[in-house]
Length: 252
Image (cartoon, rainbow, N blue to C red; front, side, top):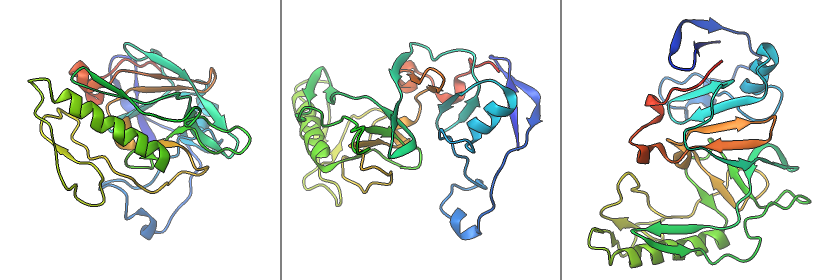
């Protein structure tokens, strides 16, 4: 394989080649990939993931960053702007997954806040069984919630939108009935956030409470530090009038 290197401010020519262990697959397995893609690179904690292989070769440690849909950086020098940090949890039933501790869910819209009425520990990861918890998954297109979590979230979402409609700048209206399979659907002024609210099937092992899918991870700079077992993340870059394409502040 080959990839660009960077001095922390710009890409440096030429591309640098490196050897990795891979496997061939029949064309039928690749049909669901985006146009132009020729394979899949794993970014899990396992030894044969792409970050693990390059970390072993180049000695830059278990550190990598993602900013979907534009780039991945293996080995980094700086942290995101306005960074937030949270621990990375390990699930014994899904050791390759990246789990984060989440205590609650709140929805905000036009200064109207509505917390989801979840039972205590609804989002916790059960260390004994490996069930529950909140996991990140780029293989899952959209966020998926366990039914009890989804019901509480949907009520909070509708409550925030309903209260926020009192703001004269809000133009959001609920669509009744919602098109199937969605339970709630809205139209109007959702700048950069036009997404229906609906259930989905789980694609991640361990029966998590919430799967944060690829769409929700987009335009957020995520820095995985597996040595310190922490995840650094930016505020959504949309709200900084920026994007992954215009973000460049990595070393190595």
